[in-house]
Image (cartoon, rainbow, N blue to C red):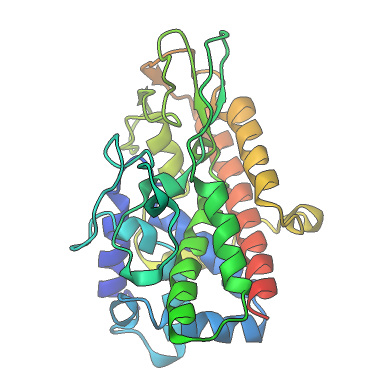
Length: 316
């Protein structure tokens, strides 16, 4: 069944700011992979926590009762992008909210009473330069600091109403951020003589990607490479066709390693011909697009397996 309310939620995420990774389809694929690998205990605890999300009723509206838990879990992975457009949420920080503001509010973990968008939580700009341009260190907080903080809270035995509210909030963010850091362009910024302040994870690199491709920036192409459907069931079906990740790699629990993998992939597989140095525009070849899709499928499958491992440990 195609779910109108879940489609609307996911569809809003498709139009989100440059701090989006994959699109809603890719994030739902990550969550669908993870759902299939959760223990019964972790599934039950995740389900109960997500019922506290303010959008839970819309996620399950018009869905069969037996599908509620899975659909809510999969759709929840889009919630941190959804709030970028939801009434009552506010962009915080400079550069349209893509940089953290000063002060403790940037890294606060207070649950659903927090109405900041925290766009800067979605990525970490590990820098590199092909032409020896001076580098800028990543801002903090960022995706790495927040994954660490959220998984620690989720593992905390606290069971008060406030604890549960914060854990629900953290779970929704983890469903999203684990996917974020497996997208290569969410872990880097390329510094060049023409772009001395970095290219914002490829957002400032223009492309032509051919017929049937609507992306005009390199980052947007990588966001959309897995597909653009906003239907949760489409993502669930696609997830079932992803390659099974290497068990040794899936067992790696350190988010800094995940980020380093994506950073290396950006340099080795994203910023390669026909992507030249500078702002472009660059015309993507069929070979580049095919290789990108293959890598994206591998990264999403691995993200889902790692997310499941994280949740099985935190929610046992």
